Length: 385
Image (cartoon, rainbow, N blue to C red):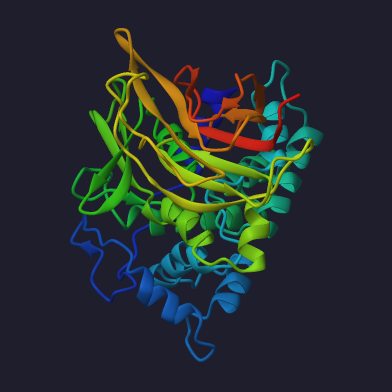
């Protein structure tokens, strides 16, 4: 079924060209497309001004109504304005997506009622996160097989997805010098999939002071060997989340921490280890885009650290002739501590519980996984029994 849906998408979503971007410069010159990275500060100014035509609540209302008069400038404000919303969650996961994929790509052929359910599940997620690109695709598939191609509801779903994709594609062509900007990391996999491109690896790199994902690609008909996506706003949102030490910031850290691959972090316990979970706060979180030459004798840690803290790196490391994903950390908590780890891929997968060896005072510890994962959750730090 997967190939069928891909071909359907190509048929249903035409390339729609618009005339201006949100900085007022031409996007289309003749028949060729030029690109402009979003100016996030300008977008923030515009979408928070109630007198502006870019005021975010009104833009979302128009998008929800599939308003075909939305221009490219407004659409860019919708997609990239999401980074300035209180509920901005670039590493979020929806249970509905797993259910949809089970219906569409399972062993049995989807029925009419299955497609109705796909459409309804997609609309449920869109209501919660109006910039979730894959859900517009799933809504289109559900509408197409529920109502038919000529139905106005299918046409509206097709048009909305096409407009949002134009906004994203207006920011870059995926080359090193013009990476495509994203507000959700998993959208890179969606874009590659719909263009029939298969990644053969992933690396977090720095381009012009911004963090980007680099994807070497398997052979494809487009002749593209590598794609680049700017995910800087996604990555830096985690650091901003913990900049303040107010109650909301500390509570959000709480007793668990989710880390994307390529992260250096320091957490500090809020008190002595308890027999149950012990609260902590994040005191430092930053991108770390290096591949370690090995997973031992790393030289990453100082001989002495601040009491009651844990410093760690969730990164790639050389392992024999290949690479592995590793969590390398050092504890300055006296005694032995236990904790829970779960791991998942960004490609819409559920969290998987995984074992660990615990942590020991002043000892450098390493946990190792294969390279199919790129998200780690650490939780429930407690006194080891």
